[in-house]
Length: 302
Image 1 (tube, one colour):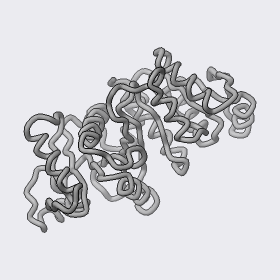
Image 2 (cartoon, rainbow, N blue to C red):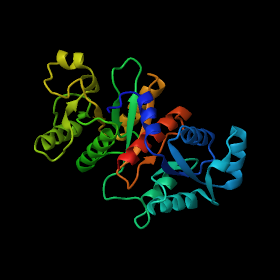
Image 3 (cartoon, helix red, strand yellow):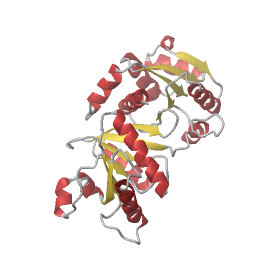
Image 4 (cartoon, rainbow, N blue to C red):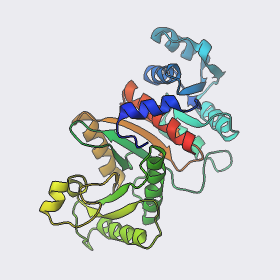
């Protein structure tokens, strides 16, 4: 079944078997509340790696009972991250979630060459948006991890997005490579790489999707705009997946949709040994719940 709304995303996450999630430093009220909601709705069971006393205080203030959780008392965020990653690596949890810990410290444990969750693939943030008055969900990468992706990293980003897309029933997603313009300009490397990625797909080097570009954002998501500019492509105006040229564009796109357009968002990190829930500090409790749901579905497929 193709998931085309966040209500359907939540329903699907509730239908599949519970996933086990390792939460690093859960003593953050929005994180703990989202985890509790996911547990109550039947999505997950959780192990909380936290400073027990600080976690207890937050749980009491939010009215959450810790009797429903396994709590591992850890003295520092760094130790919590490494212990949670080790637990995931040993197969005791199906996914990992960032709580009240700096992203750099969290990812240091994830990317540890000896005990981390590397697979040899590029790790990137995959985000799905439900936008008011838009007729479908949109997926985009990357708003939070890869600063200036190389051509090979963009290939990995496409593959990671396609893997997530298929987990939510998007069997033949259309991928648009985004730039400032929709024509190849040798002075704009992003447009040249977009053309290369399109040809790589034509020749079977990228599978499971149709890739085309470059596209400006308007003619990637609006059929009317694409027709007005006489762009002939099966992807033009109909893109399901948007690959951004760099983190600046991706991050501005993400926050513009959320804060100005009122979009809902769910994100997961793809490319690691398991899905990783890494949400923004500014994301709401609901958005953290959506991200847990997406990661649960993705973990179940994997």
